[in-house]
Length: 240
Ligand code: URA
Image (tube, rainbow, N blue to C red; front, side, top):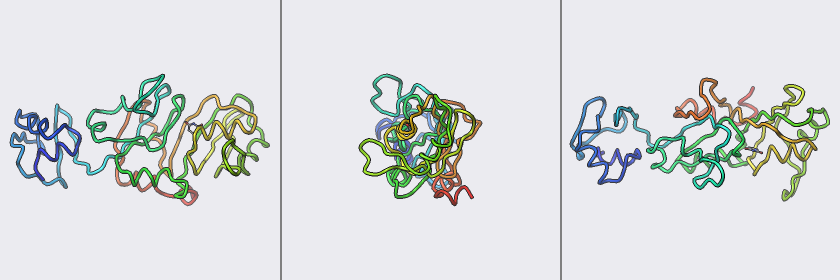
């Protein structure tokens, strides 16, 4: 593959822009500066260094973020900054999308990708990829509330009651809820349907993949092959 095409594919600008950067000596291929845009490179074993940052070649983009509170999962945010403003320009240029959305006040595990099939697999209810949330409620978590969430609660505009895959009380006002779907405001609406109210919401995991503790709010990182396998493990076998 020609070097300028690699740059383009990785989100480093248009054809013309990529060629100009290479000619200007801004690009190193596996540690060696290369100023010929037409030189042939093997994407399989390729690391590009641009502006002092090294980027391994990635055919598709899969990243995770620890979403902070106060950010909207939208390219056109209305009241808060966008989660996309926390990603570097090459990822935006590649057209990454959120894999499902979190509310602006929800924190935790958020995925991004430019692989439409992956996004579909992760969010389609038919695929059953579990999403695990920790919710702090306004009122104490009662046994009756847990029973209702486990057996199914009726939400407006839904044809039939929706049940959590699992639901456990963590402390007086906190519960962990596992869902197979990602409907609009689903956790808040389900808990609301029991007569309680969510005060704080955090997504802990997707599939068998848990948000790494070392990743601070606002930080992102690449998902590697092993991470992707964990993400796609269906619940509950993933948890056993
Ligand atoms: N359910 C909600 O209510 N909000 C979220 O952000 C995610 C799931």
